[in-house]
Image (tube, one colour):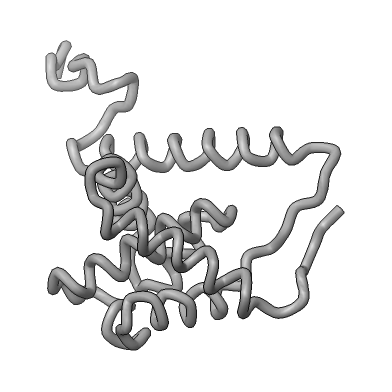
Amino acid sequence: MGRQEQFYADSGGILGTEEFVDAMIHRIGEFDTRAASFRRKADSEIEIVDLESLVRSVEVVCQIARQEFCGSSKSARQVFAKEVFIVSGRQLGSRIADLSRILGLSSPSTSRRCDSALRRMPDDLSLSRAVELVAIEYSRNRPARIVIK
């Protein structure tokens, strides 16, 4: 077949369809973030996030039931709750894969949703405030700490 230019296009060093490249970039970003997080916590304790307590905290703060924001639903209210859950979970130290499982979304979709929410947070006071309130609610209601040394 000879040299085919489509295989030499620059896409950040990843070869594949646009969708595949996007998913891999997010997956690589997730890995780097997680690795950096573990490096920062080296020589200290790593706390495991109680995802059920996080879900309950989002339900309270966003006034929406789990069944409404977990899944592929896309109303503004449901997307807002998903973003609050994802950003809050990431700030607490959860992995994208674990958050994706709870939401019923793919890891790349969850990662993109997280990136989008983080970019908007400085200008979106309602999102920023909801994330703050979830952190407060979570700290009040989580069970005894589960810590790995």
